[in-house]
Length: 130
Image (tube, rainbow, N blue to C red; front, side):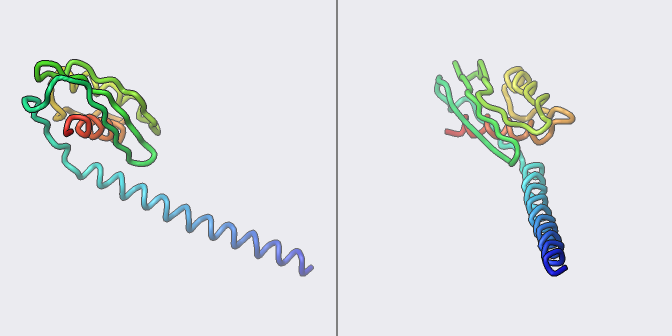
């Protein structure tokens, strides 16, 4: 009887600790995503960027993006998504075409992939701020 009671108490403690850790983790992720949504994506002046290929990365758990941006004659000629770890934001990869077409990071995010879109834009910005 005593052994059964100890097992039940242990299980209850494990569930409670798991719930607390899960709640803290969820709150931290939600806060990080809200900061990402609230931050303004900085503009990039292509006139000051020499020709070359630039690497950049950005992450907001669970989303990560690594990009390779090619600049020639003060124009973004190509953006390669080297790595994109996404939750459900695979559609955000379409934002690369928008950035090249507009030559700006001031583009609309992809609906349904807002966090991934903003992470990719921040990675491009990091590549070009060097």
